Amino acid sequence: VLLGTKGGPSMRVVGPSTNPTSSLLDLGGIRIIVDTGIGVTRGILESGRNIASITHIFLTHYHSDHMVELGGLLSTAWTSGLDHTVHVFGPIGLEEIWEGIKTTLAFDLHIRQIDEGRPCLSSLIELHVIDEGLIYTLGDLTVNAMKNLHPPIIESYAYRFDCHEKSVVFSGDTTYFPPLAEFAKGCSILVHEAMLEDGVMDYEYDWC
Image (cartoon, rainbow, N blue to C red; front, top):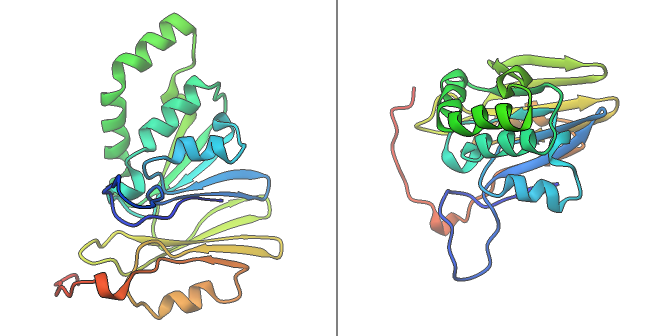
């Protein structure tokens, strides 16, 4: 389910718009979220799924339109009855982001444990800092990651989810990058970034 397909963090009143990037993938008996842009929490509800049923979150990179609602999603799932581990995957810097989320939500997390008897949210979150290659297996599900090309960001990834004879690839934000074709070869579904050529400005990055 494509919960949001808009590029960039800005939100405009005039004209049709969708939420920034986030997707929902049901594969191998688990409920996966890829990126957590604004609107991901509401999008999961509108897709007919229970917020507290999410089990895995994969972040392609840390531009705000791909991760700004991570804390909101996790805390809302928690207040909606989350009682199992949620595995969160992302590039280097994931631990610092999670610490920042906990600091921002510290009052609410503390008072709800006391007032509502909820479990400690941190005890339900397992972080996985990724690199290229095979990053996760669970039963028949395998997940591979590959660095894409998103200058000036270095730590930006594409993901491939394989289960039985089905596979789904998310390109993440990327410029022209031929290795992605080999990474996605034979997949059932490719969710790929696209840009309006007339809206692209030329930049020169010393990204290497």
